[in-house]
Length: 116
Image (cartoon, rainbow, N blue to C red; front, side, top):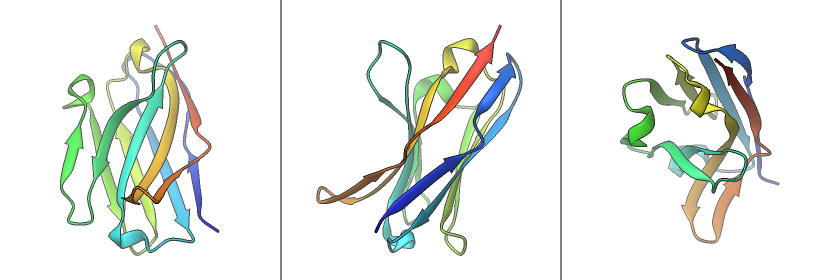
């Protein structure tokens, strides 16, 4: 059974930092594109960042220069380092593992709240 378990969310003041972790099990982690998405109240889920099996990364314009996605294939874990957080970063953050349309998995989400 595939499981993606996020951790590291919480409440932080604007300008602060958080690091999210996503531990994967039940998949061949190294071959999947791993990503972080977020959904704020009343808004659609959006891509924050993803990292491919070849370590190519892609970021939403709104987080470029502030967030960094990394992966540790030995630990089956993907990370999202979030610096210079803003109130508009407040959302539920979801981990995603994508191999193909039939193998596209999501975590349960972790809340990030940034106070002004």
